[in-house]
Image (tube, one colour):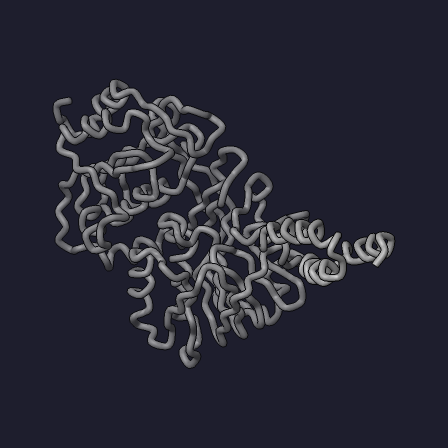
Length: 427
């Protein structure tokens, strides 16, 4: 084969998809000993391209009601609701803003699919829905679905999963951060409020990932005990779940995946979600719980106090116990928080467990400046009549949402004294 013919063949196959190109070059390499080495090097380079980029699907983003078989089954109305703002030591005494909260509803879809840790729902005709992307809040927010390759306006490129899991009838309880305790409580757990609206005569797979957090799994299984026709189906995180029929819930409650800058509109907890939380907490909390514990919620890793040990030792001297909620079994966790009189520590999803705490519990969360507009805990603290504060100090990096920070121990002592936070305990 001449060099000219070889070049023309190269020019032709270069336009083929990567997988076809790889096979063509392999065959071509066998025809010419001189060109084999160069071509094989090219093949090796192609193989280094991530599979995520070599194999992907392109979809047109549409509202969920344009997916096949969309039928609304049950609905809880939204409306104008108040979102509480945090009390920030030295900066704000709280307050609230009014927002137009969308309602919650359960719908049915036909012949769609989804992947773990993503909020996208795909159909067979090249359409994909993701309700969060149609919210006004996403003008300044960033989707973090793990299967996103590229977003250009309404054109979405998503990864392709080889492993297909088929379900005749499914209920989706997965999403971008459904494995995270705080996100699960707000964005996914309340979807179970619609279990009673699902058909009783259908066998339904409730889809969760393998190795789901045991605390999350406990709550799910607790809810399913009265619904024998619904079973959990654990799937591999690298799979795609293909459903003949999918029951899906859209919530008014909203948590951003990520943001370009801090905004109180990144977290909107609806009244229906708080009511659901409280109903579940009342069932699980011991009825004879005494309110006496002093809890310091421990934190390791980033987004924490630089002078952590200094602050921790001060509170331990005042009778506090350091706990790591995720390391407890869920029964002990619920019991401890139901007995809490004081809860302090670096802000984390561990503070979500204060939903199990009694009225009058005092809460002080240390937080960096990027996140002090976080309204997540404020909603249920107001509902439960907790006395709750944020306290911030000096961040390492004001532009980093996960920045570490330092809060002077003297400033902490001054706050405790001026607000009688520890109820006349000598500091």
